[in-house]
Image (cartoon, rainbow, N blue to C red; front, side, top):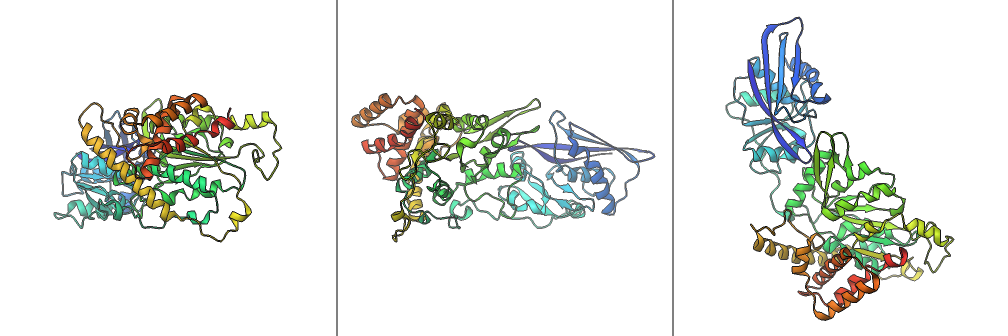
Length: 530
């Protein structure tokens, strides 16, 4: 007898609905035989042992017959333990253990324990979105994945704890209680804007220029590089960056949650990433760990930092080949990983924050201590960061050592709350601007495929529209381009930063002072890398 159930398989950060067909021959054999077809991986092939034990320990008896399981479409590779539950339900249905014959309106996902209990699986949010897209109303999943799946509207989520509960649910004419969506699409309530955001900028003494640069970077989503001697506060400043970032919008939170769900790092108690990620990998990380990879590609740190911050401390200590793989995601906001079996694309729209010493000993250009490095040593050290990568970083600032009077001063420094208020106001201006521009170009060939939320994400065409300059500002930028030998990419990034500085001042047009400040953030690479 043939019985069909439905499940889902995750590819990248999206999922496909999979039909699970179970057939038993009816001819008794000396022992029970399982055959799984449809490009299963090792975890799916091993499910026969978990399913057999779970069914028997749940009180059902399987006669020794041949069972064939087909996972369709057969040309897509199936991986993971989430197929345990649909296979077990398919077997019970084929042997007459279910009163219901049609479960096509249910997507079943879950890993089975040998006692019949259900364990959580990765990638539940993409599965819930795929079920809604396919028009399937009901989702039967492990209880631990319930909050994650309930984020998606239009899908009835049934949290279950065991195989017996699933059987009772499917056999009942009136299914049990449905989890109502506990999360409402309200960015302020949903994303916890008032929650504790970690260390505060009021802890940082001095470094007013660095604070200003970080405020500009946070307001526009710009990449930033801090150069200074050891102990000047570069790491301390970077770790306080999350406290002034704008809250995630719901679309951004959904995209980020999908990545964290697929990678298996999502907090199942929350079900949704509510704050912008802050990832700080060690400099011993590999290129696959940073960019993503594996036999079946998985997200790397650049994707886990999507819509958040990727902080690289001691930048020159990272291997050169690891740093060079950052070029494409910094430019395009995506990462494409190709393997023989498949090619997957992951979002990687992050804000890069990096810190480094100016030389091996760390005291080049420091007024209080002598540098022991020779010019060739300094040049070799800074050249570990290539020119093309440096050109993709919008803001370069020097973070000098803090003077004793500033360190011991009694006046309180400005806190994160005040800075964040200005950042939020600038972000709202940008969002309104791009929302209006998107409405005007909707349906035209000029419309962008991904929404733009910050100035750093503007395309070349959007720069021409939103970054018009007066004649005096135009002359200043032209002079800077000629004197410093800046590239076309640096030209665009200066305009983006100037637009952000103007937004922080609530100015409609870019003035000379905005251009001048943006140019000042592009001068350090000419002094250290010249």
